[in-house]
View 1 (tube, helix red, strand yellow):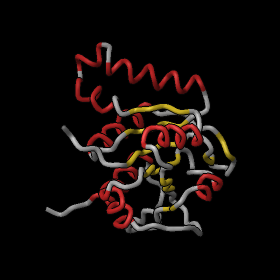
View 2: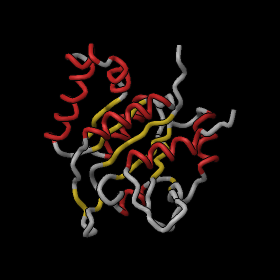
View 3: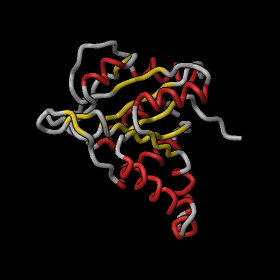
View 4: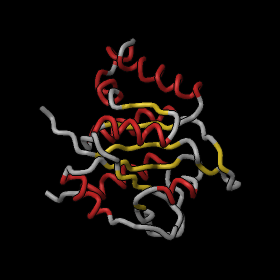
Length: 191
């Protein structure tokens, strides 16, 4: 039996910023569902959560996943359905926290990510990775869509990972690229 690591990845669609700095609900993206569930499956995470308050978006996510788990897509590409089994949809961060608490029997550690510099309780990638590999506490890594997690989310988390810095000044990765870098930094083991 495969051993799951005690972490969850959550893609937050509200509360996030738009490019004008207003708190909004961002749209779901089909690619995020597919690519991030595959990423979590690759790193043996427990689940990939999509957080949106909009019922229409939650229903769309469920339809997309069902197509690849039960419909023609399940026959056409069974590997995709296997990854999409990890997708869970919730309406809020409170619902996410409560679901993990019920499932694991303890309060999850919430870890925010951001491309911006913030003052906060930072945790290093190595330290968080070791904590997850130790398996004691459930850890949720939160990624923001749009122009990033709202300040209220970041301030409400236990920790914040430092922003990903490239070699130049440009700093606007897609959430899928950022998620892959974050998980690789958390669990990188040179062979």
